[in-house]
Image (cartoon, rainbow, N blue to C red):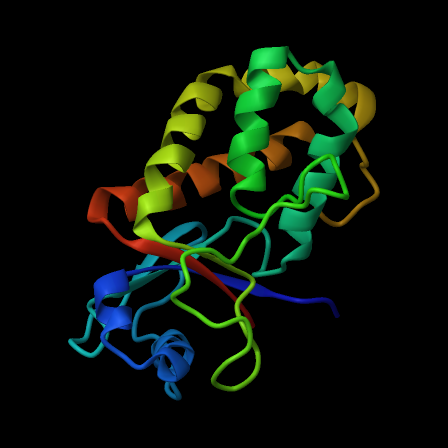
Amino acid sequence: MGMDITVLIADWAHLGEAAPDQRLDLLMDAAFPDEGWDVPDPECGWVWQSGTDAPWLARYVFRGTSGSYKAHFRTGQAWEKMRDAADADLRATLDRFLSGLFWYGPNPDDEATHVRGGLFAEKVGRGRGVLLSYPPDDMPVLVKSWVEAQPRIGELREPFDAHAVRPTEQWIRDFDEFADVLNCWGEVVGEADSRGWGLVGLPS
């Protein structure tokens, strides 16, 4: 079945008030309440907890992924296949953006670290850990990379079609699906930065 991911932005100050070994449980209790979120999921975009129990948290729904992590993994694979054909400046900018989120980079000996900031221990609480975690201080760099890259994403259509298109795959079959995942991540980091919040990805 594969792994799913729940992408959240959260108020780091609120989470930091809890003891280190209780922070993940606090986050998971809010992200996966017993009765579910009290608003329906959109096709794409934000789900905000409307009650007063978690005004410090929001969840992002990625279009067409059904919550699967495979869509993000395949986006990273597609970038690896096409990045050598991209303009050097755009390649460097997207390398910073993607390796700052879910891609592990072109050098297997120098993999990106996706759990940063020390808020969560690697395995705490219920033992499930986190897939990614970035403190508020990391958001400006990610936002700057996306602001530089976003107007030029269309330049990647030809490299994608030449090197990364896989029409028989379930995820990221064509350039439009690739670009949509990037645009969604741009929305996530932009909203987190505007609120001074951090970013977390939980397995689900």
